[in-house]
Image 1 (cartoon, rainbow, N blue to C red):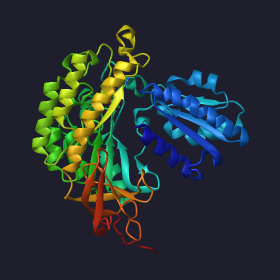
Image 2: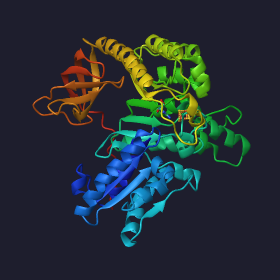
Image 3: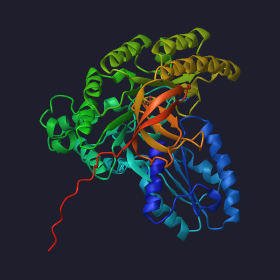
Image 4: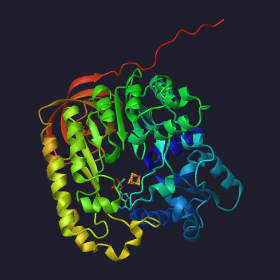
Length: 474
Ligand code: 5AD
Ligand code: SF4
């Protein structure tokens, strides 16, 4: 969500006439978009700002803006510790960057704009933005903002507010518009995507005056009695948009992963064979203390149903190590469940106490850093082994890749992404492939984090998404 916000800010600044550059030393404006989900982001912010201060001293007039949920949470601290910052704005003010920088240029003091929630619910949803402003083939589409869950460790509900779904018909028309502009891959974003539509259905039931076609889409406009549209309905509708060939989404919550969603994934050709299903812990007692609303057994059962329904499904997850009070036995249960789930990749996080959360009160139960480090290493060994096995299993297969550009880890290579979301590194042909090109790659080697491939078929030109329409002139 934060990366998406960063690209939206970049797109607005570019639309106002700025050019994007990588080197802060040469920039007239630097926007630091922050995230407060874990504490190390706090520490990194002040280090980054300290560095930018010296750049600003050498380059008078350079503007520094701090955006995002950490800016929202710590506005006073930022102004105290870094009074040279020119603009501070929050997650509900993402679309205001250009105006705020302008205002700060005219005033000699910092401009701060932080809304606790959007003024109008509609303002919560800025238009979809390309994943990279320069490459419109892939776009993020926010389908829902905020979160109504109460995970004991998580600060997101505080900073992103209650859950709101974007009207169904608006989303579908936005994807249609993206496709006309050349987008063929969309990633649907929300904190808890499979509860998409719940608030829309409730609003429709309680207020018959609302525009049902806009909120629920034409197909479900008359189903005011049932809870529709569902997330699965959205997957099917986006899958029907001409030109959309890859649909991804993050993140579903295991407690809400309904059969309907799994069926829609299986039946919608464009939905990629990829599921990110955050486990957090494999221990039922820790899951209960985390208030996650499922047990390990129920999680594994949902996962099994998804795997049986969707052939070749890649599964990834998030795990938190060292939740307060986590015992050795509880941690070992996580190792067992992780091994059983056999993930393609895992994001592992060290528990970080966040102010205002329920878990932040459990100071006496916090786990010693050396115990956490040891558990983290043991978990890493299990997840790396499982990822390597999943990746080795791809060797010898031919996979469709969408080219992303130069490989991040080795500039002599290019990288592309498979439908399962795996990165494939390959030697570029004489003329390197353009980002957004679709090619076939033979997988020849695998590591825990990526695949190696050889491009075996010339890149297909993606089916033109832009239709040529004769224009009458008089
Ligand atoms: N400490 C550590 N990890 C956290 N996450 C969320 N909050 C915390 C926290 N306080 C992790 C969860 C979530 C991912 C986005 O970040 O695993 O799924
Ligand atoms: Fe945080 Fe839980 Fe909501 Fe995810 S579902 S954003 S972990 S409160």
